[in-house]
Structures are given as structure tokens and as C-alpha cells.
Length: 446
Image 1 (cartoon, rainbow, N blue to C red):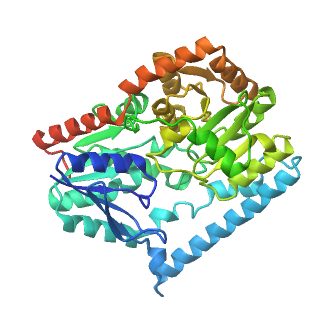
Image 2: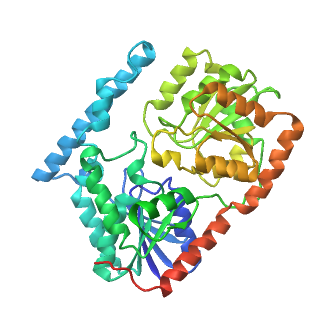
């Protein structure tokens, strides 16, 4: 089949979409991924056997039209507000006695132009829809709610099948990431309810979110497809420690343990709590490796570490490719997954970093959230903690490290878990979804 995937990022760091597209290409399907063009990307490239076509958002092609002027004003106002917020946050670091929540922060969270990225860019949406219709694909595969309407329009235009692949509870996300606010929440929920009913297949990332979607929208329970790294053949456990020594001029003594956090460096991921837990973990350093999704946040964490007297035990490393993550991570002693329970999507999350730790075969300490607890207890690969309490995090890490015999038992369990949790198994699930799609009757895409 010819498959057209839609994703609302530039496809440079989206491991899930890349794995799905690559797996489908290996199965013999023709796969084209439509993504967003940025200054760091090419308009078209081929990787892993599939083609990526990128379309520039409207603000990158400004003209003198009234709509472009309105978009520019919205974007500049939003940018100015973020700069003001960043200034306020820096003031807070310098003067911790300032109120935790300022009026400016609240305004930024509720700012009416926050949804401008896709609600006020009809040019991008229409151009993407037209390009997708011209592909005359057999299947249009929407990744998350912000592409579902475009995929639906393209599927309707070609009489093709529609897949909705939601990577989280999109309308219940981290408020620091959400590109909507209360003014648009009802409209988006109505859109999701209407279009999810028209999909020929719905895919999501875990059991809890599948149950929630089935209950909320009265649909058949979605298929589960987890974003898990492939089986790792070689794990060089010296890479991470060498990188810490070489890049940070740090001499790691044998007794010093590395607590490793992988993934997005942003608010509500529990990084502050892990940092504070070092007060109760005298022989440990905290290493964060990933992308800073909010420009100044890594610097804010470094300032916090210095203020707490922990600047020599906290390090931020630049990210590596998704294929290299397990190899680097295998040099750590404990993987920490301290996601904060601040929204329903986080409450039900199964973040990639959990599976990357399993692939790297390092024991984990995770937040006490349903899916995270389920994996840890099912495979006996670590401990859970109250994600808001640094002392609890330290307790869980102490228990993971325990004595040598306990730690060795966790490592053995991780080998079993890695055999049952890997992309090769998930790719077979994806093949079955598409095989069923080929033989199933059409959904009502009208």
C-alpha cells in the first residue's frame, strides 16, 4: 500500500514516527511522511527506506496579506511574553523569596495566541492537505490530534483509509507544552470526538490510555503500540562514564553512582526533585541527557544546583541519536523516571525513557504512576517513589542499589524484560494492524 503519514514536527527527533515509518517500509509499503520544514532541515529527504517531505509553516513565507500580518503580530506578542516570563524566572532564581506563581506566568499559560501554531496557520494546513491528496495514498496515518483533521480531509478526498495514532492524551497534556487553552479546549474535544469515530483504526501507547479513549468516545478499544528501542546487540558500559569524564572534566571514583535522566529537559519532569534528592545520596551524581525544550531551563537547573551546593554533582549532556541512547545509558547505575502527576496524560504515561533504560539494562527508580508501577512490578526491575518528595526518591535509589546480590537480581530481570519489550515485537503488532486494515471494510469517512 501507499501510506501517507502526517506529523507536526520536523522529524529530526521523533523516534516513534521514524520507527513506524521504517518498519512499514521494510514490509514493502511505500511510505511518505509529511512534516514541518525548519531552518535546520531539508525540504525532502529519504531515510530508513521512506521519504520525508516537509512543508514550511506560513510564518516562514510571509507576504503583505492581512492574514500574514495578523499571524506575525500574534507570533511576536507570544514571543515577547515568553521573554518576559524568562526574565521573571531568572529573577526568581536570584531571589527565591519571590512568589512561586506570578501573574505573568499565569498570563503566559492562558494567552489567547498560544494555539497560533496550528489554529492560526490555515495556509500550512491547506497546503499539507492538498499535497497529501495529490499523493493518492491508500492510507493516511495521523500522528496526534494536531494532524488528524488534515489526514481526515486527505482520506476523504481520496476515498482512502484513516488511522489515528495518538501518542498521549493530547487534550490532557503538560500545560507548558499544550498549544491550546480553555477557549479552544471544547472545540478540540469535539473535533477529536467526531473524527476518531471516522477512523478505520486507532492506535495508542498503553493500556490505560486505550481504556480512557474507549470510555470517553465510545469506540472500540484502540490497538497498543509502544515506542520501544530495538534489541541491543552491543552495550559498551564505559561510554557514559568516559563521556562524563572527558566532556565535564569529572573524575568518577568507583564508589560514585550515576543517576541518569533521559529525554526532554523541561518543567514537570521531576528534575528539580531528583536534584534535591542528592542531599540524601552522598555518593551519587545526577546526569541529564536530552533536549532542552524550553530554552533557559537547563541553565535554571544549573543555577538551582549551585544554590543548593550541588553544582559539582549535577551535569547536563547534549543528546545523542535515539539509536545510541541505550548504549550510552548502559554506563549509568540507576535510571530515574520522575514524571510529575500534573495532568491526566502524565498520570497514564509510559515515557520512552523507561524503555530506553530497559534496553540499556539499568535498574530504574520511577514515579508511582499506574503504568510505570505496572512495568516495574511486573518485571521486578526497580522501585517506585512519591515523585514530589526528594527523600522518597533517595529512598528508592538506595533500595535499588541495595547490596550487590539485590542489584545483580535486578540486572537479571532486566534481561528478561528486554526480551519481551523491544521494537521487533512492536513492529509485528504494526504489521498486523495494517494487515487487518487491508481486509477490513471502510469506516464512514465523510
